Length: 58
Image (cartoon, rainbow, N blue to C red; front, side, top):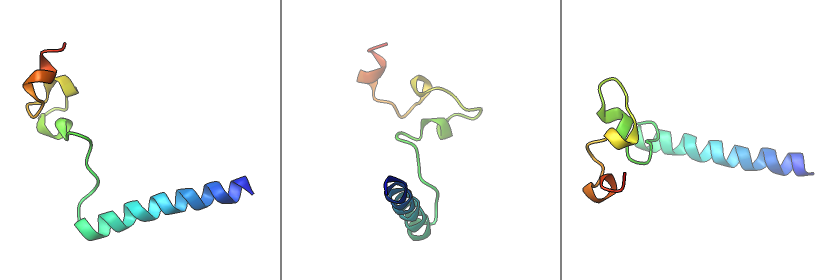
C-alpha cells in the first residue's frame, strides 16, 4: 500500500512540473538564479543579485 501511495505522490509531483513547463515554456529556475548570472558558473556568494545585507554576514 505504501508503494502505491509513494508512486502516486511522485506522479503528482512530476505532473505538476510538466504542467508548469508546458504553461510557462521554460524550465524551473533555482531560488535566486545566481548560477545563470555567472559566465562560468559560480557559488551563491558570487551572485550579483544577492542582497547587500546578506553579503555582509560572511
